[in-house]
Length: 239
Image (cartoon, rainbow, N blue to C red; front, top):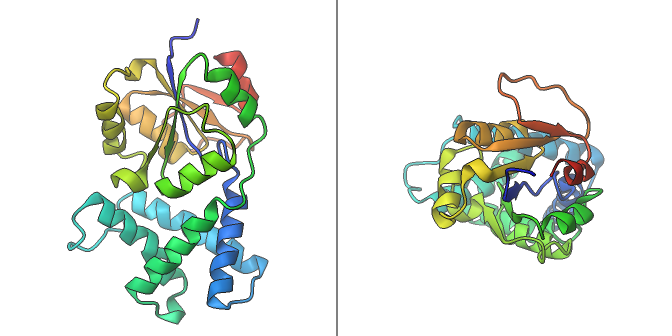
């Protein structure tokens, strides 16, 4: 019998195809700005956004001192990326916030579920407590979960946009366990696609991890997940 009683699922690119959602949201931003869509521009945005959040998560990009609250910092980071990516347009802070709001609203309009996610959640929900832990904004996460019809399987959604700290920051997990003190980390498993957020966060905090690796990439880091899967349906055999 498995030792776990709680499963923490990442959302984007673990249960939801985030690339599909990003494309729809970015197209809405371009339409609002009256900028013609092209695949190269979308590719550039995806590459920029990934590098940007990696820089934020590693502490290489910091918020100005006037942003003291975690929620304020989160909003700053999310809006600042539009100023940086569209730097030639010289957007002010208020307009960048408006663009981010537009982007977040549209992230959940078109949701594509990862193959196997529905049946895996249905199988697990009667056996474990299931949570979503995401570095995305809470509003978008809730809408994605509802659009994918996952809400009946999930106990709660924990988002970095809500608490102001992102995985792998230990404060993200401090927040979770302070709100659910009856859950033991020794009986928790994190399932996620990202080594540098989901797996590293779990390793550093002493939580077992399952790396969802559908493209069978190599692990270039010194830390390793507790287990690795290439298809979500493998969880029904492991757990």
